[in-house]
Image: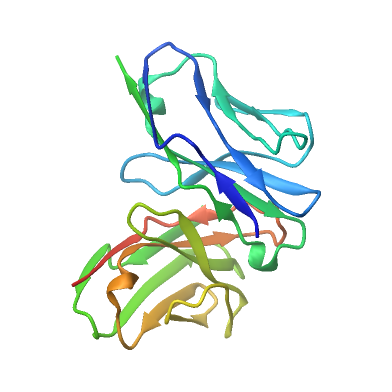
Length: 115
Length: 114
């Protein structure tokens, strides 16, 4: 079945350094939709960005990700981390015709940005 | 603007007791509704979805049931709680129907079963 792997449970960075959160996926479908959801402390998860176009960079709020179907990856990046970026980040997968619009989530990566 | 509320915020219940969790969406008619569950240390799993009033589809069998009694209300329940039901329950909605639809999540309910 479909699955999403986020290898890092916790990423700790100093403010100003670049951010890269890893996400790889497995699916039998050739046209997956990939999402990054972010959850700040005491808030609900909200969509950060999404993509279904191979090799096209998607950007939002300073973050960017590129879907690479050849490597089944959708890594999240940012050039310079800010304290306010500290949050839990989920990578998620869906596909066209997915029953119930089902999102398959990774386990999440907690990003902690220190001064 | 649309708002989503979940109740209660947190619940501590005994094994074998009944449970009812609620979710209400305001400011959006005929939303698609979803229940998600996250075990401690685990990932988010979709449990149920509903496209319209009175119609609910089960995605994962966890000895839970769901109902949609009103257009803006989604209820998750069970008659007998298990220890394995502990975790974080999130209600979500979407306007669009399709794999690329953005889902908007509620604040969640923390359930502890003892």
